[in-house]
Amino acid sequence: MTTLLVTNDDGVKAVGLLALAQAMEQFGTVQVAAPARNQSASGHKKTLFSNITVSDTELANGQPATSIDGSPADCIALCAMGLRPWPPRLVVSGINRGSNMGQDITYSGTVTAALEAVIHGVPALAISLSDSNASEVADYAEAARVAAIVVRYMLNQDMPPLTILNLNIPKGKIKGIRLTRQGVRIYRDEIEMDEDRRTVRIVGEPPTGVVDELGTDIWAVHNGYASLTPIHLDMTAHRFLADLGAWDIEV
Ligand SMILES: [Mn+2]
Image (cartoon, rainbow, N blue to C red; front, side):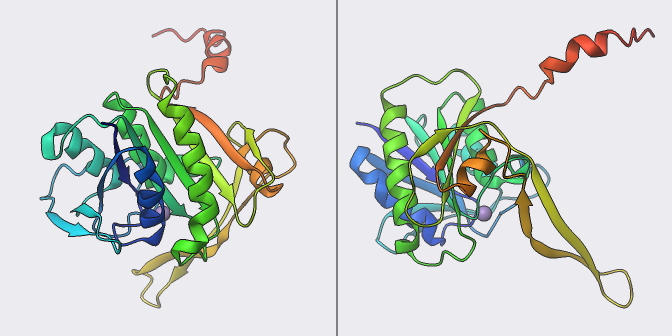
């Protein structure tokens, strides 16, 4: 029996998680282990210096779920270390409210949960919907449909080591799917300060991106296509290695 482990970074109560868990039922047994609280933009965080509370809960459809008061990567790592049956055939993370493209992938708990899965040897897919206002399961229907199609391929193929697939879906009906590379995000964060200048917040408009660079994730989603990007955990700048050699660094 095929088992799929579903997680996310928006928290175990997020409707995007419910939409994904429901869409995965057709493939076998669905297990859910997700953060107790919203862990968006928590990055590839490993909780080492505090206790992590684990509790049993269920999704709105009655699907049993494990709520873990840690990061998305913690959820996967703890399952891999024996908190829950391991390994699943596939880890699926999402459906995130808001896209995860370009440099977002290093901030994204949705993506880093998938990266944690491949560290533990299990193939993984991260799924994000480019609609930061999505608030009902129905808003995620198209994204869940596309995710299920990609999952069906993944269940019939082998993934190379330390490699995930990052799926981004535009709002509304998609025109199709494009295989893409990481594009360039443009962040518009601002600092907001209280009068004492000791309490600050990061605010500002959502990021945009370079949309006219053909073949990127941002280009695809901007043009109405689902974007599927293979992401490798080896972040070595291979193309720069030779140039770096020309520096003749000697110590
Ligand atoms: Mn999120």
